[in-house]
Image 1: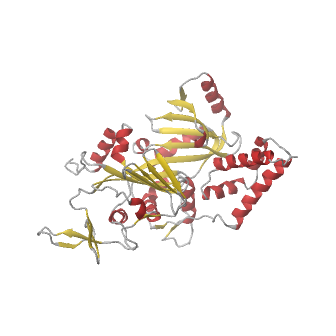
Image 2: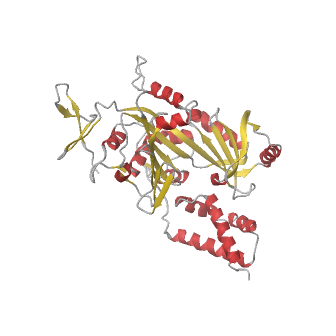
Length: 437
């Protein structure tokens, strides 16, 4: 796809001239498409909106004993790592059994996977970092602090690939109501939300629309997802509007301390969300263009590492979801996001440019088919012996290739917890079908 021609006004009446940073977009044959000159268009903020760090390992028995004891006593708070945390059991959809939450600190700790034994190696720990926490500390401090938490929950924790959300806030632009028709992506399902109603169809992509063109969502949460929504409205509903307005004012301040942000105008957020399986694939498949050895792979496991690649991840996300004006041309907003935005809230990477590529095996690959056959045959054989379901799950997780199996299923959008839940359901179905008779 090509970009529309860009122009700016010369200051002499309505005369225009070509300009790389112009806000007047014109089609070569059809003329003016969009003029953002008078709309007050500007970027008012950018940040890492969410960072979820995963750790692999076995759960320490001491933390489980202490947490269970506090829950038995119906205690609401739990002292951990020198801080008081809200303690609770996590919902099954999260994949974890326990939750420690401290919004003042800006962290949520989820640990002990539902479908894995505490003494088995698994991704038993997920730490969710809010932008409040991320913006107040250096990447190196964040990595060290998260690892110190992991050491108090897991035996010899091993850092795993994170999930990350990149957010850009715009003022002076509002998405069109037919935005869904203009976005190109690769997903397999479409959902349309109007108020509290939900409709779902099997079409060429996942997209969600909420309210009067206030919120759009494209892609799958277990892969790469694009969200476009009214951040002013969302911040007001969550009582965070004062906080966001102060951030937008600081971001747009000039040397004289004057801000171009207007509290009277709405702010829309464009957010690209990367699942941890996508970050892993990018880490394994990307390469340094200046490398003389031809080595493939870049380090993306730690926050200090991934923040060196935020611009590359942003560009990759913008090309995964293309907003088109016509069949052959990008929408002007996408041109601005690709050509003008330097996504570097934590600083730019030094060194040679990186080619960002995902390495993953296709779902219809030879090994993937064999994993499916292995799991199906395994639970069928166990059903003939009428083994307890937990014994079956334990034996599955002890397979020497279990990590390869879970990595494969994560690459096609099914996390380990969902896989084990599906295995449990399939096993119970086989028992009811009389495999043991």
